[in-house]
Length: 337
Image (tube, rainbow, N blue to C red; front, side):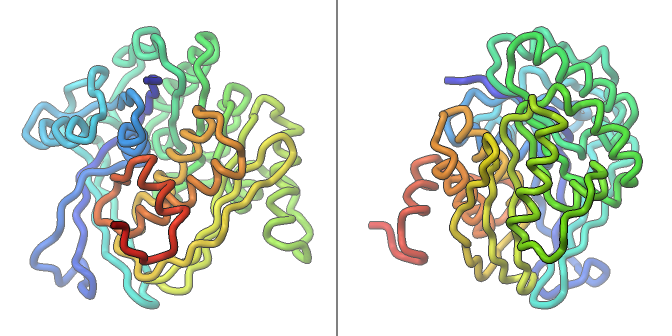
């Protein structure tokens, strides 16, 4: 069983019920989630020895986080206990033409105050196969940015594969801040996830001819990117056609050795919960790489997993590899007997 490690913040999520605004809600649904925690949970369900590195407060919310992770098979051996509070966020659930809306309440959270001395990289990476982190973690503090840079360098020294998902969130930092934090990491990354807008506004790549198709433009950006960073062996992203908050079309992309592989288009209607769909895709791409799936199989598997995530409540994907493969191969909506 391969060991995978993710580093990030896990938060308490408060969600409105469909058809309600946050300002009018008398009750909210509770879930725990966060990008890297969601990836760890997905990979634990896929059979990996998944470890989540973070910092949580020494109170009942922190204890509940640990219980949540362990209930899904995620190891919490490297969790640090301390700080004053667990970060939270509020999701006003979208429906129809009204988009979902997120409000963060994570300032001075335990994880955002985590310092470099609390992360024991040599111990964490012992016998590890993969280290995954996202731009959300970089956005939370200058010290975390430095810690992640140290972490990816140490991972490369120890022959641990490194994965970075841009996961840009405009509510957390500016494009300039993101660019300054991301660029130093890229020479140490093996697997990367970003889309067209990231290529233009965060990487500063020359904009492709807009007369080209979306797929042709993506090939243009990924080709230019790998010329600059030949160390990056895999790049992934999704195309999402938002018909409404309740209906999306989703297609996955995986760029390997100069060639772009694409999944079929999944028509997701109705969406039960979109949050975590990107993390389910990321975890499944990483699974395809670790298991050495054919690139076409890997991107088809990852997009199917993401589509499945949209059908359940909460941030994390709860399906096994076998269930994802069975879904990918079956007709939509067919009863599995």
